[in-house]
Length: 505
Image (cartoon, rainbow, N blue to C red; front, top):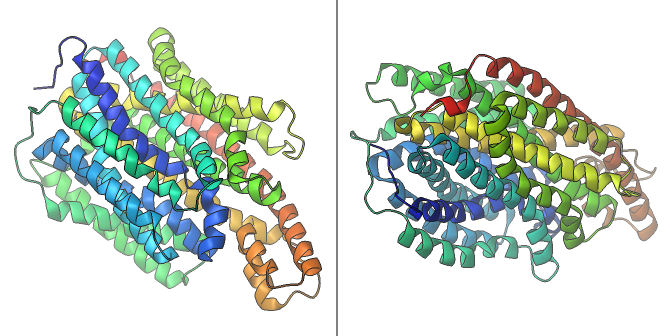
């Protein structure tokens, strides 16, 4: 039986879960503008910086499905409140981490709390809103919180770094949790239907370890940080663990993950949209944050203000997507949003950020609006193709798509950025080999290495690093535009095989 809230109470429930979701999505991007400051403060290597940023979404991707099924067994309210508590405590630990490895460990704990929160949010929305039109509006409002929260993250991070140390970008979560936790405790219904059966912890561990091993192998392989035999061995281990998990799901009378959901083209399209769109958005924001600060010399706050057009436009995307999908159908709305995103990325790739004029804010606004509509459309596709009894599983899949997309986006953008940057970097003569090797890793390492040289050689090294990163920025945004164009064609084909989401109860 699904949860039904009579009268206006269902909208209060929506408000509660959106408040719970906000700090999780803020934490995905608030760190982006803090990367230069954090890198210098902790003397973190490029590899450590990438792990600090993407251990959060990558680990969460492996935890979401197990946490979603656990919520089905013991109740969404209990898991949500536990997740909020863990998230608040982990935020305090991250704020005062004395080293890069300790910060990575705190981010892992943050991922555990976030993985408890996200599936519960989507599952509660699906079960609370049975009417397709209301569900589309509710998911649109939820999408607004997600897109606007991700976009406003750099602005909040920049404002905090303008007055406080880098740990403030984590510590800000603590007072937020002190408000969100009692609000959810009061508003969320205490009685809810839970699924029978036990929680298969063995299957959960298989999935978590399999995903972590596979993703680590991808990171190590693309980054060329580990010997090829080690990469292949870890990749094979991940593939074996995931294969065993799949076999157990197919044989189990009560599987942790209902693999039959993947037989529905709308759900497959929605998950692919979530992965590629969120990955592109995360990678682009990280690239822009470094371009604005390292190359253009903007402060973290100025970098955040520069991204306001994305934030403002993204806030409109959720409700607009719900309304457009109800009026014109999901397929044209989803495909057009992705196509427009590709055009905006291509435009940003050829634009000179030193003299932005009005074109850059316009392109950033178009990108924010289009990606927000696309991400909300993916939610409508997935949740609309699932029955109320499948809400938890569908919500976990969608959240996994978002987190896996963000994590892989940051990983692949970061590794690709490092490779392209090294090829474009032309250092002045006379730089010691050890410093030249360090500077070739990233623009952050250029600044660290330049400190060890005299003023003139250091300035020349920084100038060379800025030129190389500007070229890298163009290559990355062009690549993202191509990926978005390919995604448009794929979604067009997949959604042609399914009826509109509103057709399902």
